[in-house]
Amino acid sequence: MKSDSRAIFRAGKSGLSEEKIYSFDNPPMTPVLVLPFPDGNDVLVESVAGSNYDQIHLHKVNLSSHTAVELGTLSGYPEGAVWAEPGKTLLLSRTVSGLANLWKYSLSDRALTQITSGPGPDYSPMPDPATKGIYYVNGKASGFLTVYRVRSKQSIDIVSENASQPTVSPDGRHGMYLKLLGLDKTELWVSDIDNGNQIKLASSPSLLTGDWSPDSSQLTFMDSSGGESKAYAVRADGRDLRQIGRVEGGTEWVAWSADGKSLYLSGGVNQVKPTVWKANADGSHLEKFLDGGCFVNNASPTGGYLLGVIPAGKEVGIYEISIAGRHLVPLLPGVETLMVRFARDGKSFLYPLASRSEVTFYRQAWRDGQLIGKPQIVLRLPFAFHEFYQGNAYDFSRDLSTIVYARPGGQADLYLLSEVH
Image 1 (cartoon, rainbow, N blue to C red):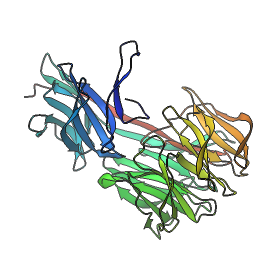
Image 2 (image 1 turned 180 degrees about the vertical axis):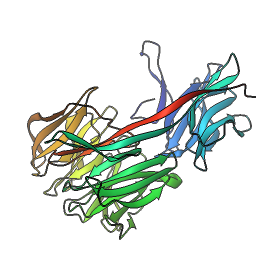
Image 3 (image 1 turned 135 degrees about the vertical axis):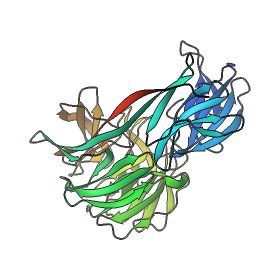
Image 4 (image 1 turned 60 degrees about the horizontal axis):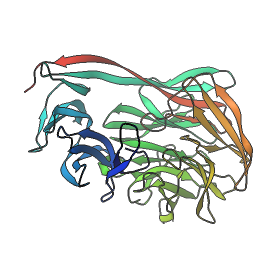
């Protein structure tokens, strides 16, 4: 699979002689797992539609004819599928009524059989062909959300639960984040940056944080439960909730205009170069703004440009969109980052690059759509953090005085389930 394609590919052991096997374009779906059938002529492909990981679609794809046969749809955030009996049955983890257990799925009659029970979560099944038993993992995720103060070099855990997708307000005083309470339960919270004045704004099986308005009084978020990612705007105190139109294929990112009167939604069926839509801040008058855009992160303080990223694929990099001209311009092609922000003075933008042991922040001078000079290192953190954990795993204030990042962890145990029939 490739991060910028809906197709599956085959190549020789050398990596050469690449061949496209099948593309999931109609309807558009993204492959997430490939398992070979024992006959060597077919592969089983799991795919998802948009950001709806609650359901996976199964297809049998023939390597010679490049055709696909549908083999059913599974709900319950299925994950970790492996062959139980190769070519006939699958073992996987599913979440039903809040409990994640192991299930067996028969390709012939599409029947589901529960294998383990109890509170779980049970995942990562691995059949033992010698004993006909199943090894699997049972354990819960945990973690922290941490604030790092650059000047004092102090770290403070502001959330002692599994959390991610932090987003810092433009004034640097507030933040929103998600509590990850299970595969089918997330909560959206806002608070002061030190976690005072906490308010829960939403609860759903699958939420995504958006961004703050320029005056730090409102925010956006997405709810992808039910098979489609819908965008919402709301005041930071929970008042004035409104849905922002309907974007075909769902919304993955929402950014505000510089004056706070408009919203730019990135998403749609193109997973690599998303469609950008524009709507009024009250959710009305949704219109297509640009096909083949980027994931818009930020608007320039002068209001003339949008700043965003393509985080994966052949066209990875940092981009800008001229609002007047409605066209995409590469600024720093090849730069692989998840988040880019205009600095408070509007004369430069900031972005991090991570390595195994540290994170380095760069500043790129910018004026009226043009780069000035080359990127300069402005901050090097003496530690590394996850860039992606159930969404963006970090954010930073526009003056780089505050870094907020997720520290996922957990406890897990390995089990062997005796012979399963």
